[in-house]
Amino acid sequence: LTDEADLKIKEVQDLKIKVDNAISALQKSSGNTLDDACFFIANALKLQASGVKEPIRLSNFTYQDLKMGSEFSRKLTTILEQKLVSPGGFNVTTEAITSEGGEKNKYLLIGTYWEEKEKIKIIANLRNADGKTIASAEAFLPVSWIKENNLQVKPENFQEAFSTMKAFKMNEVSGGNLNVETWTNKGNENIIYSAGEKMKLFVRANKECYLRFVYHLADGQRVLLLDNYYIGSDKVNKVYELPYEFECSEPFGVEVLQVNAQIENFPQLTTKKQDGYDFITDDLTTTLVKTRGMKKVETTAALLKTEKRVVITTMRK
Image (cartoon, rainbow, N blue to C red):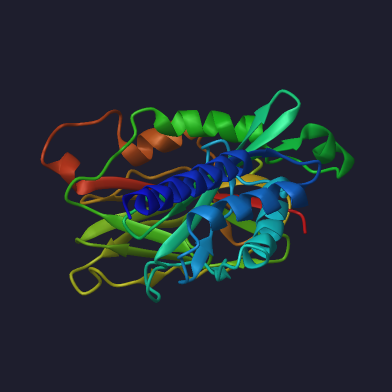
């Protein structure tokens, strides 16, 4: 009887080793096409999370960890969704979750991709509702496939957008007791809009405050969408939809929605009217100073000042 038990234990151990080896092989697989890479990712996740039956929300993968999308990430999302359903066997949705609507998915699949010499490294992480990674996978795609299919792995205005991101990091405002949520009709993470699609903007604040919405366009221009909008006691914790609807059009690339909130009025920005919008003529540094203040101030008032940014990638159909 003891020999039989020992034999069973060995069989289980051997099986586990085979499964672990298979997972390891799939996690670091290479393929000649994006279909191959997505197939490897779907199968690796299936081996690790076969018990997941609830819907998985698939978010657009981003270039590195910069929250920037591209033509490649849009294509990747489309093919990966197919492979996750079959052969992966997962129930997948790409529908955005906004702060005001519905229950959040129990599982979220997020990822990034990185340029490594002659290959693109794709990393996928499946997380549960607590944010814990329960499965992960890696796949590699030859850069030659990207070139053959005439796809861009970076947004069109990458260098300009990267410089803008660095400017935002200087004297960054982080909220204390004041909290502001902002999102689009596609959510607030890893957002991609294609030419012709419509975008709506929403906000919600937890305290009385003044709001300023600045939209940084792909060509470097800035639009003042909403200024010194007062959130009174009757509007606290209520959703406000901006009275604008935007259609995705040229120029394409990374754009940023910047939302600031504070308990005092904002200093006036220099603007000019064009096509019904207030375009800011101040440069980026001046705009940030007039919106954030000269520097961080460690006072009670600083606890009632916050900033949120939503990175949005726009591109051709």
